[in-house]
Length: 411
Image (cartoon, rainbow, N blue to C red):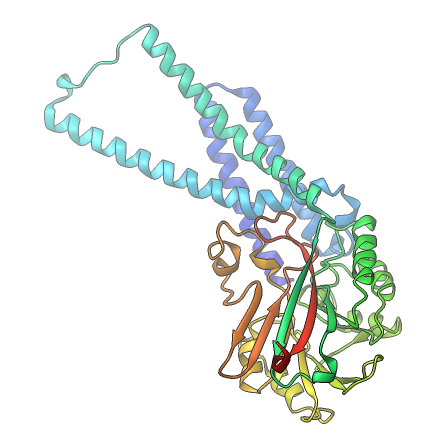
């Protein structure tokens, strides 16, 4: 909650700063109607943001608003407003430099030698272009935010099935062709709907996987959304079961209550725990190791060591680690864990190129796809996830992974 309040304060300060700059600019050019538009937009943005964040209305408050409203508020405050503020600050700085240069030039050459502006038609044209520019500066950011919000709502529930074939050292030959569906980052909340959840059920079950795993962020923020999320989980079916771990969004409101509600509904939630899977189709057993997500997660991921040395751990059986944050793989490799399945990154969410965008800019070392460490004979597979906390994606499509595990000897 402290982090949310800090973000809230920053966003409000940016809102007020942008409002003051636009008010001054529009007042200087006598554009009163645009002034009222800008004021109204910012007041509504602040009111909606407050409604979505303040503790008294925190639980379930977002679902009271139409989906377009939280989408607009998120995109405006997290994406459009910071970019606009940066561009505006840059423009003001350049303007100050240009004015300074003109003053130096006038002082050096003498004011009487300054070029005079041509009166009449040229001045009118200049004023027209200036007015058009001011209008664009005031209207373009809110319009862009609204447009992107509309685009983001059209993306809900449109996800792909991403198949991967993994050749794994020490994977039992008898289980060659074993399949796992990875349903990550559903984020049931303001940017999900019944159709999306039905499609997740239909398409995941349609893959007929041997096992289904869910590496965290089942809900977005509110525990009010958990009952419908668990209804979806209970309609997923695989011969060897459905297993889930916590993500950071699952524990924002109350991690203990989240876990209790999952256990009460009979959902198999792994919290620094190890479970042995005996394939229904026969063959050797293997183990799932699921780590707990904790607030203020550090890069040493002590939970990895905890499950790697768990009393239930059988080192004769092949282990698969479920970790919400992909950086846990660094510790997994040190503990000779050959396969880690993760989510959390949303594939970078907004990626302008393969290696430039939200993934690396947010500090992720790994943000999508398969990563291989041949020295330690370990692989990491990251799902882009099927849902969103931030409504918009670009070059990071929603997906359900369909993994086929093979013995490297047969690859």
